[in-house]
Image (cartoon, rainbow, N blue to C red; front, side, top):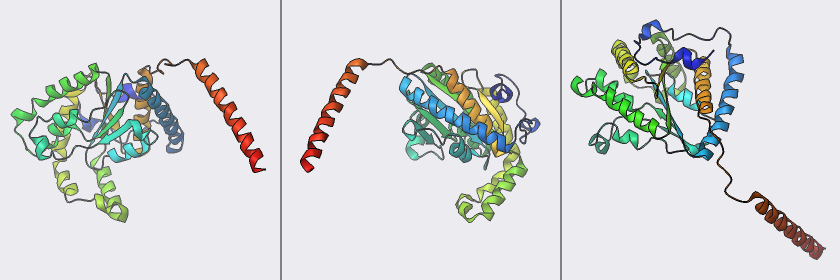
Amino acid sequence: MDYRKRFMVEPGAKVRLGKIDPSFSDSRKSPKKAAAEIQNHVDRMARLQYLLYADGSQSLLVVLQAIDAGGKDGVVRHVFSAMNPQGTSVFGFKQPSRLEAAHDFLWRVHLRTPAKGEVVIFNRSHYEDVLIVRVHKQVPKAVWSKRYDLINDFEKTLVENGTRILKFYLHISPAEQLARFKQRLDDPARHWKISEADYSERKLWTDYTEAFEEALERTSTRHAPWFVIPSNHKWFRNLAISAIVADTLDDMKLKLPPTQVDIAEIRRKYHAAAARQGRLGHKRSGHRA
């Protein structure tokens, strides 16, 4: 299955999340079989990240959005685990600081975008400014409704500067969210993740759904597409996302930069140094004897 074609939101298409099955999984796959495929994709990602860093002409930005307990942390942990931390960063955008709020809503986001050769994952993102601020009426509609076009322009600027953008909406059902909340309650190691907002926000499920639908419709573009990933099954979520990321990196046609030195001359110096080291070691060994 081509997961990019299967789950991409076509630019201009209407999105009705209620008609997308969050429990969908490829009928040819099983969790056991998927585990091997996920590992293969993760290994590909690691190799391609090395090329991305060495090539130094492009970058990758991955955006993760979901309702509470949608699995953003799980994706970071399981899908991007093999990437070299030296060239990978994860950022989350929560309530703006006083300094951040004094600037335009994209100011703090632009500071965190990837430099050439880097991979950056947004665990929540600039889309919070057309989601939570809309649902909780933190700013008027006259303000947040203009942000879709600003976001599209912002992302187009990044793409024209060599950044590939992948945006994933992790689609779960209300029942699955409640089951995950119960896991947090039953596991003392997860108690720190529990908040009163977990349950109060559930009352706003319809409002969040409408906000996500409009964001997906108005900001899925050819240069920065959205993918709606069925995420009730964590294994399938990881399989689809790892495949999409690996395939996208592969499509970037990354390659090693040309050699900047005379390899033959460097090899000659290496052999000369090794020979001197060998003679020195022999003398030291004879002296100890």
